Length: 113
Image 1 (cartoon, rainbow, N blue to C red):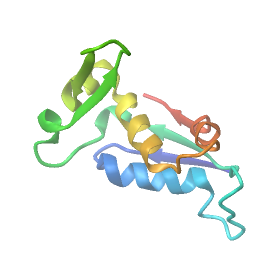
Image 2 (tube, rainbow, N blue to C red):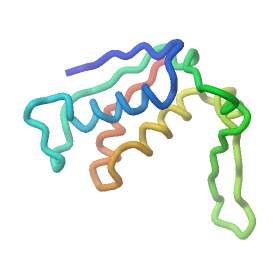
Image 3 (cartoon, helix red, strand yellow):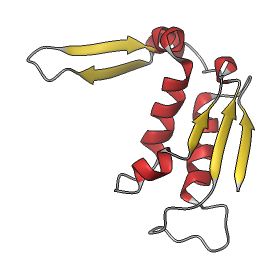
């Protein structure tokens, strides 16, 4: 089944939890945590997603290059300018269980601009 979600004027965390539930298959009566699930999620208008408070400047995304002292940081504001879909993808990935099914579930998340 394909779920289409319009995220314009919706909050990032609220939408991410809804998407994570759908990708896990928790909306079905035959939910089993060991199964991958079958639903796809198509997200539209990701440019219009909101965050509350001062998170545009205070929320920081970290990544490491692998070299000593090379910790890279991006604020939410910079991330949104670079690619607005990255912030949503990062939030959904963090809300899925950390096991071998996470990458398979993330492949069923399609983000359109």
